[in-house]
Structures are given as structure tokens and as C-alpha cells.
Length: 86
Image (cartoon, rainbow, N blue to C red; front, side, top):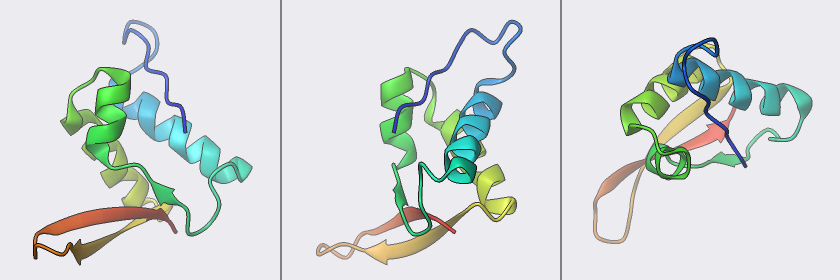
């Protein structure tokens, strides 16, 4: 999954660019139902943006019913969120 973020001048806020690209991938079938969406820190690192921008995009995608988060625990008992296409 490749997300491209451009300078915000004329392209909109970073979170909106991320949200719209992921939404388009879901609507086109590139991301199928049940597919795991990369964790926010992965997208943030790839795009060179703040993780908060990705988290806001994921929040809006979740509010729109396009993705769902699931809290899980790893073998050390630490909690983490997994995001999947709804």
C-alpha cells in the first residue's frame, strides 16, 4: 500500500490526503474487506509525516465505517490496535 502526501498548498491537509487515498483504495477493491491496514506509525514513517495526521485519517475512516479497529494483546500482554477494512 503506497500513500503519497504532497505539500498542503493546493492539496489539502495531510490527514485528508491520507484519508481520501485509503478510501479510494477500499472503494476500488485494492484493499479488500478484512485486509489489514498498516499501523499509523508505518504510514507516518513512509510518508514523513506526524503520526497524529495518520491517526486522524484513520479516525475519520473508522467514523465513515470504512475501517474498524480491534484491540488485541501481544504475547507480552501489551495492547495494540489492529485496523482492518470493514
